[in-house]
Amino acid sequence: MSLDTRTATPWLGHERGTRGYRRLTVALFAAGVATFAQLYSVQAVLPAVATGLHLGASEAALGVSVATGALAVSVVGWSAAADRFGRVPVMVVSAVLATALGFAVPLAPSLTPLLLLRALQGAALGGLPAVATAHLAEEVHAREVALAAGAYVSGTSLGGLSGRVVSSAVADLLGWRWGVAAVAVAGLAATVVFCALVPPARGTARRGTSGPALRTRVRRAVSDPGLLALYAQALLLMGGFVTVYNYLGFRLLRPPFSLSQTVVGLLFVVYLAGTLSSSLAGRLAGRGRARVLLGSVAVFTAGCLLTLAGDLVVVVAGLVLLTAGFFAAHAVASGWVGARAHPQVRGQASALYTAAYYVGSSVVGWLAGFAFGAGGWAVVVGVVVALAVCAAVLAVLGLRPRAAAGSMGA
Image (cartoon, rainbow, N blue to C red; front, side, top):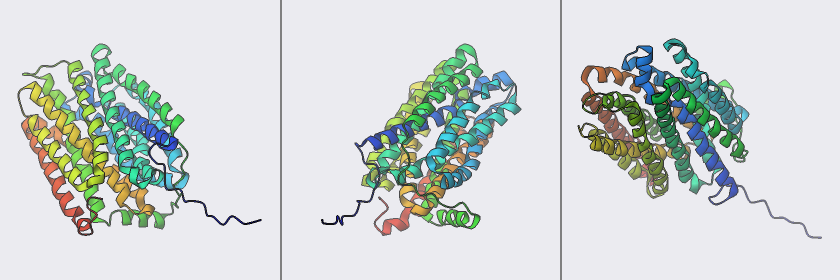
């Protein structure tokens, strides 16, 4: 009898076309929908919240900022929990907890409890974006990571779209509380899909959460100039993107546009441009991530400038370009973090990218309200364009060292 001396082929990750790949990408697509629909359900009804609770624009915008700020604070903790208990269990707990809190938000009687519930919901939602891209980097074959990340980001854009459109349309009929509650129902459905389809992890190794080990991994995750440049993309571009969506509704409800709340909400349909552009960027990234990233930032900037127009058609066209450019840049940058970071620090790098993303959303999105109140829409556009220019410059400078090694486009 001869002995079989063959060694098992090492598992390199789910490949496109396999059942595991389909289940994972659909599950994370659903997770993106659940997360972003609930995170931004309040954004589309900010004018209604301001009217109902007798608030100014910047005060109402805190309903978005406290949620995204709490999410930013929570992601490192979620990442550490994922290293200890596994990424799939952490994402499941995050989704279920956030959805439960989503049903409590509409019951808030005044601003203070509303902000408290939104902060708790934002912190709960942090478990999904904190580990999703790192999970993809370790569960999907290396050549499929950019495409899979694009699918996940498509889910985030569709979630942002559905959350805003549903809440706005229902709010016009029944009030903002019912609008937010309707999104919680949609979030529950997406959470069920995610929990049912997400496959068990096969490529993720659990790591210790002891203080020195965790601090070492975080330190390594901030020592690479390229990773720092990618974190900057998240902070600056997300800050500009949320600023536009926070305050454009206030502008369009006023003369010369004088649109209804429902029509303003329907403008969020342009989020579909982000769904398409993120998938396209994921495919194009294989030909050179840096070029796709910088091109996306340029599209984002051009779109923002078009929103200065007094013609609604031009404003909508600008919003389409801005949205497409943002989600394309986000798809490239988020996937690049997982690919560039050392395997031992992928979780921390992904968490720091997510933290930067939501610091931009919460801090810039709130502070820009004062710019809107002081100088109107033109000042807001100036702020957003300046953020985009800074993002492009930092990308060129921060990613240049890897270009010399021939990997800037990798």
